[in-house]
Each structure stands twice: as C-alpha cells, then as structure tokens.
Amino acid sequence: MTLQDKKSRYWRQHIDALGSSNQSVADYCRKHKMNQSTLYAWKIRLSDGSKPKSKQMIPVKVVAERATNKASFVRVVLRDGTIVESDGDLSAVAKLADMLRRLRP
Image 1 (cartoon, rainbow, N blue to C red):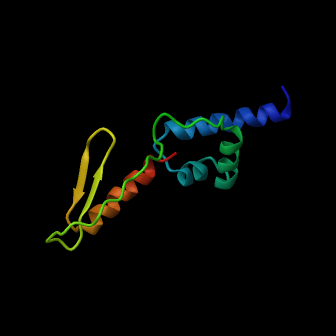
Image 2: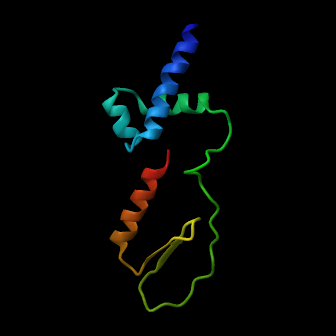
Image 3: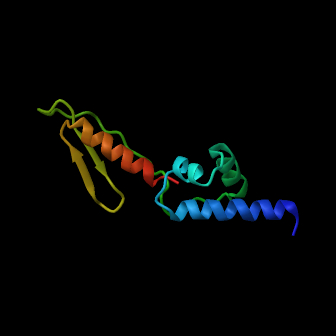
C-alpha cells in the first residue's frame, strides 16, 4: 500500500466517522486534533462527484409576500410535508436555523 493510499484511507475513515457522528465539524476536528481545512480538502478530494442521498440542498421557491398581522412570519415546508412556522419569534427561527445547520455534512 502506497503512502497516498494510506493517507486516503486515514481521511476516508475520519470523514465517514464524522458523517455518522452528531458532532459539528469544528467539534470533531478539535477532538481529533486535526485542521478543519485539511478535512474539507480531503472530503472534496475523495468525493466521487455523486450527490448524497440525504442532507442535500433542495431548491426553494420564493413566493410573493402576503399580508399578515404579524411583524414577521416564517414558514418552512420540508420535503416530507412537515411544516414549521414562526409568527415573529426570531429566537425560534434562530434555533431552527441552528438545527438545520447541524444537519449539513
């Protein structure tokens, strides 16, 4: 096995472990004493170019603003039909955004 094969295997194992963990990239890299940029570079290098089956970005359709009595209104419809709404509670929107960020690889 060449040195390049060993490096590829090492980084593939870490990328797979990160994907199956519930940790952020920053937490995982801190725990394993590795550089985030290096991990991302290897992730790109080892990518086969296919899109993941889950946790992928999906198109969003922006519709015209509708009148509402609320100061702000946010509605997110997930692919499975789940609807998440907020009627101006910006802290709830921030929490939702944080949770969605954690789902990304």
